[in-house]
Image (tube, rainbow, N blue to C red; front, side, top):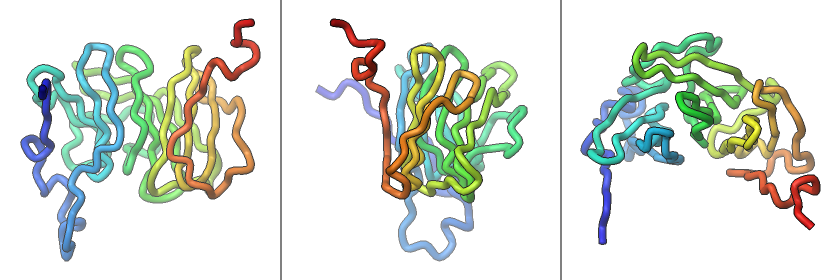
Length: 200
């Protein structure tokens, strides 16, 4: 039995992608949803790549609560973010109440892992840290993030073939080498594979 359904066409308009995308296009990917996560209040966070935004959706009514990102319908003021927005994102994850992270693929080099504190009353998004693997690391598509139990993060840079683990403050802890330029859409840290965490 169908328990819940949400249709992007009921909430978004084709003009949300911008006139420059529509002009001369024979086909348009209006949303391209690529990640979904439950927020700590039980509502949904969905990443829509083509809209350059993360959308919060009421899990009961399906109403859009807010829209956040570099797209035309952004409702937030970015704070302490030198870039000022994100684009073409992947891998949105909830870190803790009011804090989310994502891979900002971007429209140009470099791609970056970013973590924001979301204030839903003031409608501000304060960047807590950004992690840039290198000035040349860029993935126009793909990639993802994972939140680790100690507050750190794992990020995969899609087509750049880079996987890096960072601390809760955004400092590099380790990286997976030998896969450069291979397409790594998503990586996940499996606790049981780490010797110090195995049980005999």
